Image (tube, rainbow, N blue to C red):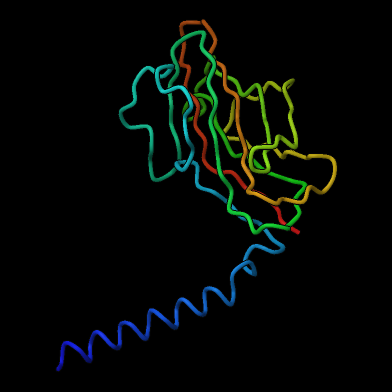
Length: 173
């Protein structure tokens, strides 16, 4: 009998949490900033890394590419369908602790689901730790989910090809 009462209390609590979460769904992202931690990124070409050991850390993503290769990093940013955004922000570092690196961010693509809604293929970001604001020029209504894809290139010099991503943010209206 005691076990049954305990189970009933758990079931009622779960039901209340479900109703509250459904009733408030979509309200938390409307207007304001949403950030995604750097360690949540997906590396498209793992074979282009010098090592796949120890790349996800509590402070972000830390990868070292093989010389002369290109890669994509993909980030999914929580989205409530129908919200609008114009600005995204990327916090990054090439090298480590201020060291120079032969590694650059060359592309920033923004997606709504499978549709690319913004592309900048003529950038050259390095150094840091730093951040860059991505201005898509106008508000974009997001219907299927917001994604940021970051193109990174490692040079051929005999120096570090390290890239660190600390966070990705979006501003919703």
